[in-house]
Image 1 (cartoon, rainbow, N blue to C red):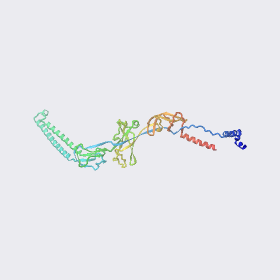
Image 2 (cartoon, helix red, strand yellow):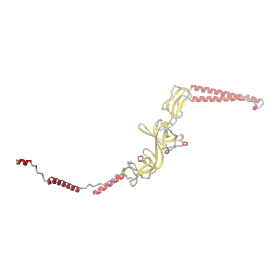
Image 3 (cartoon, rainbow, N blue to C red):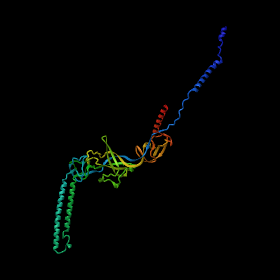
Length: 424
């Protein structure tokens, strides 16, 4: 019975100090240790805050003398093109072996001949009429002289003699018949000459329209020819480029007798033929003098002598065929003391970014007289040896600091020298 009482009694609890004090002491000791470690730890080194200055590319500009080059293009065309027309009728009797498309004829050389028989007969008839008229005229002169002698035998003055008595009308009619007969002979000779078709100038055949045996009438087209002594290239020029090109005035046009003294700007023509670039040098010879209403451009004419090389003694003379499309580089006038700046440096319509001696940004306005795909040409607003910023900046504030590649290289070199000194 006693044993049962003892087994039912609850177990004795540990003292409060053991249940709470020991864990609390452990926590406090841990906190103290952590605090000691924190206070004794080495503090991290603080790096100074560095402001990042934008790195830019710059170019130093200097004044120079610039000769503008204006590039354009155009087609080669003959200076003269003619449709040869028959002035007589008949069958084509003879044809020159060179009477083919591309055939070359010297001035005065015969291309073809129309059967002249009818015109030879007409000439003989006209000459016969002339001989007859001359005979009548001689006869009338003799009769007139005889009439004067007979009137003198009457003892009266010739001044009072009637004109019919002296046969003056008959003599005048005979004289007129001689003139008419001479005119007929001359007309027949001209028609006979026109049975032979002659080259009017040094020419090349562009189109052949008749051949041997074919019958042609007056007004029939025989061929199309063009002159080969020189060709012309019609070059479109913008209004803004025209002031920089030397163009002969209307009263200073270069005549064919004065080709050795060109008055206009020099032109270099280039043409690609069989993967080879060929060039010809020439000059501006004239302006068309009007502005095209649709394109608003001016047209200048460049002249090139002997484009086919048929008149030259040099067998290696380059050929520039009519119809070829060529590039033309015109050497314009020279402008002195001008600043040339890469086009990528332009900001807006007329602004540039500069970097001064203190590496500060400066915005300036400039006067641009001309520009092309690569450069702009400035006459005012820039000083000699100005440093122009080429790099585009996301944020632009006048007076902001900038770095150049040259400055960065110098800073890197200085850092390397300092580090070697520290090691020593």
